[in-house]
Length: 204
Image (cartoon, rainbow, N blue to C red):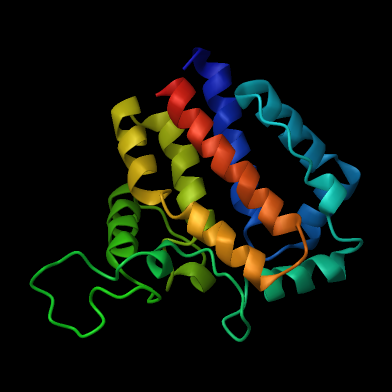
């Protein structure tokens, strides 16, 4: 990593990406519309990773549409949404002694990855929002932890964390394509995949 400023900038990029996978708030909408949040994110990612993708050109027209897109795309278990929760995309456990009938199946929350994230959160004494406590391996939490580790953890730990917890994004992106025709979250996820790979390659 080339200097403290670069490290902080990269961590900030992942924090913004994390916010974009949460339920849209009026605050984040105003930052996008009035403070050029997406333009600043795109410029930073292009500068650090040489990746050029525009989120702004596929942003919904207004705040209500953005919230509806979130619910229909990645935020509701009542629809065919593609939920950004790591456990859903991996076998529930790798524990060979587990005899539960769904132990090797995918599609269940609170699997091995969630247990590992809960362990890290407990060790770091980090509390997560109540609405995400039943899914600690939600992508927003994974990205916030990554930002924290970029600034506070050794590089070998960051590399291991990225290898362990970001290897399901391609499958998530594929499910997004089936969940919605709107391009915002698909493009956001494509941008994230490229950024994660570039960070892993260029800085670790």
